[in-house]
Length: 217
Image (cartoon, rainbow, N blue to C red; front, side, top):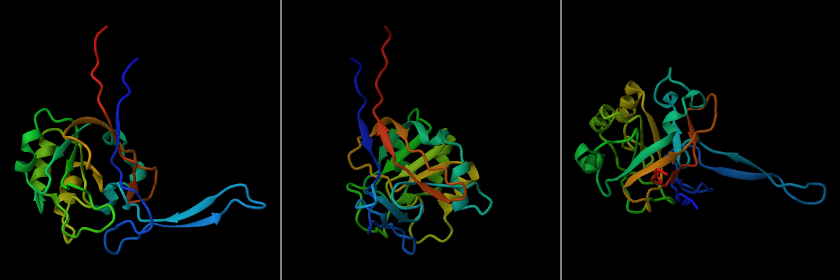
């Protein structure tokens, strides 16, 4: 029997009270219908920012002429990736924080900065990427970067320098991942955004799948 690849769920829980960027729309839910006499189903109604939980930013988020998330190519969100630990580093992740794990990089890199991600509170002191670090990753063929904080830029940034590097180089980004239990190494990433044809981002259910070595018969 072939081995069953292990899965790591790297998405934070989404619930009423889940942390959001200050001023952003929090998750909320109400029941539009409930099971009872004359109603055979439960149906909920939800409201949220597309940046709640694990999410993919669209170019439209940081570029007024950028594509909405429903129109971006899905290729970057599916395939081989590397998880690199930079726990406790910051406020900006520099190249020296990642250099120990950058040989033969796959096209996708996810960076863990927390020992335990704050899934129940907002962290104004979140770690972010130095723009030069993103430049170096792109030079090595990386097309998607991810991080376990709410933004690849500092929370108080008004210029969004790292997002502008992403825009200029045509990279894709995942934010708000949970990498607490994921060892450094290579995996298969599966984190497809919804086909929201006019939205600036989309929630994703991000998972990592263990790579199973192939053997010749």
